[in-house]
Amino acid sequence: MNGAWWQRGVIYQIYPRSFADANGDGVGDLRGIVDHLDYLNDGTGRPPPAGGALGVDAIWLSPFYRSPMADFGYDISDYTDVDPVFGTLGDFDDLLEGAHSRGIKVVVDWVPNHTSDRHPWFTESASSRDSPKRGWYVWRDPAPGGGPPNNWRSSFAAVGPAWTFHEPTGQYYLHSFTPQQPDLNWDNPEVETAMHEVLRFWLDRGVDGFRIDVVYKIAKDPELGDNEPGLEHDVHWPTIHDRLRKIRSVIDEYDDRMIVGEVYLLDLPRVVEYINSGDELNLAHNFVFVHLPWHAAAFRASVAEFTELAETSAWPAWFLENHDHSRVATRYAGEPGSGPRRARLAAMLVCTLRGTPFLYYGQELGLPDARIPPDRVVDVAGRDPERAPMPWLRPSHAGPGAGFSTAGPWLPVVTDAERLCVEAQQQDPASALAFVRELLRLRSGERALQSGSQRPVDAAADVFCFERRLDQRFLIALNFSSASVPAGLGDDPDGAAVLELSTDPGRARGPVDPRSLVLGPDEGVILRFPAGEAATG
Image (cartoon, rainbow, N blue to C red; front, side):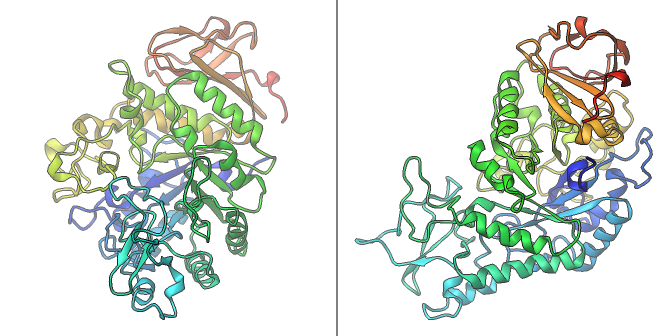
């Protein structure tokens, strides 16, 4: 099995505000992404030299649509245009053309659950109870005795109830996030049709797929029942599956496209429902995985559970960083110095498991969270630290924008940008960037690491070990301890292997006996076995 591009490749998430600023206003834009496409993949297909391309296969762009920016682009006022802060539709077309010419697929965010309160649809809906678009959003009378219609809460704790009273029409409207993000009513067929047309607009333009924001929220209890222990009425209602099949049918009108959903349900059986049928999502982001404690047993068990639940058509998606979660180097920091080592181990984990790896911009640099002074905080949910701008150049000569911008950046860059920036790491063969570039090069050249079978391998308690097989046999051993640990591989596998890559730049490559392998603190290794030991799976 070679698989589709979204199964074979590595997908790299770009948060446009924070990747690169081409016009010097302190905010990243589409033209900035265009200017850095060669950093992502130069299209040559050759192993990158020092300072060469990262080697990703696709990019996923967080929202760049017109928006008042109450939630930094996830409150959309026009689904079919680019916000001026990010550029123009012409800039997007240039980005698409430039990416495709380098073999990079382009996935864009689609936000179907809610719009901005400044979207013309909502403006019309709020104009009168008799508005033709009143039913495009969720409006209800106050509860008997006053107050919100039910006990639903916003996903943002700081917001409180998921309802805001609209004085002019005397009803409440639903918003799963901020009051500036009213929920669309997907029980209205007109809404569904309109949102399908949004998909076609971008598919006709040439995008290769969509990441669907909070997809599990587009199906809610139409009776608006109160949430209760063990039964949530505002997410994952049974109608979700029919809605997803209709979305998938739109996607399948076009060749070689895909959809990946944000399925933020901390219940793996429910997550797998979204991909098991083969006619809903192609991929589902697995937040159970993101919330695991840093223990080999936890990751081993979670991967095994997914494997047991998944049907033949289900394909995993793996990630440990995105725009809503603290970065690995900070979130999983344990012993002093372990954060950077664990960032490399996390990259090796997601890029060697059977499935599609998602990397977040700056993850290849091992970036930690940035320190945000109280007077610079802008996000309602405290997500600024993981959204700090990409440090491209040394601040000592590029200024506080660190090559991200010639102006003061919209958020401060990481404290240690002098050492962590792309410029510094490109000149250091022992850097995180050099490691991730080599990891992606190895993965892209080996079918076994893209689509081969996967089997767990017994190892020491602190070591998560598994093998990948196709035309080659690889063994991946990951030490989740900050102490040196014998891998504990015993007599299986036996014989000599070749160490292809280690997260420790000080470990020499070459022949190694797996039976005597000792892993360093937070170290991961990829071993290759002789071709004669490979299965044809």
